Length: 175
Image (cartoon, rainbow, N blue to C red; front, side, top):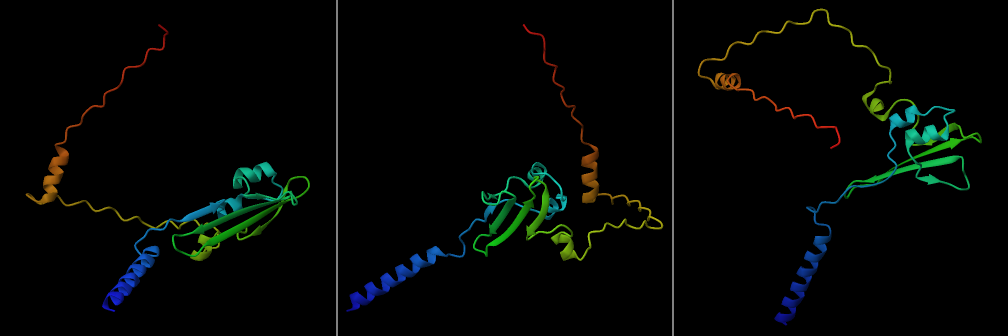
C-alpha cells in the first residue's frame, strides 16, 4: 500500500511538471507577423484617379487579388505578440473599369493619422512662435585645480592626433 501511494504521488508530480513545461512563464514566445504592413502615411498618399501601377508603388503588391472581383485589391496584416492577443488590420482598394482608384474601405481612412488622433492634434502644422530674446549662454567656470574634471580636460587637451593614411590611387592602364 505505501508503495502504491508513493508511485501515485511520483506519477502525479511528474505529470504536473510535464504540464508546467508547456506554459512555463519564462519561455520566450516570438511575435508572429503576416501580410502587408499598411501605415496611415501610405493611405494618405492615395488619391482618387491614381492608376494601378501608382497604387502598387505606394502600397506594394496586394495580398489578395480576387479573380471574381478584378477591380478590388485586399491588403491584410496581422500581428500576434508572443503569447498575446492577435491584432488584424484590413484594407480594400477599389478601381473602376479604366483601372483608376475610386474608393477605399477598411481600418484606415485618409485624414488624421492614429498618432495625431491619440495626441489630440488635427493634422495641421503650426509654425512655432519665435521667442522674444534668446537667453545668452553662461560661460562655464574653469575646473577646480586637482579635480577629476580638470584631469579629464588635461587628458583631452594632451591627445595627439594621428594622420589618416591616404591610399595610393589604383592604376587604370591595362598591363
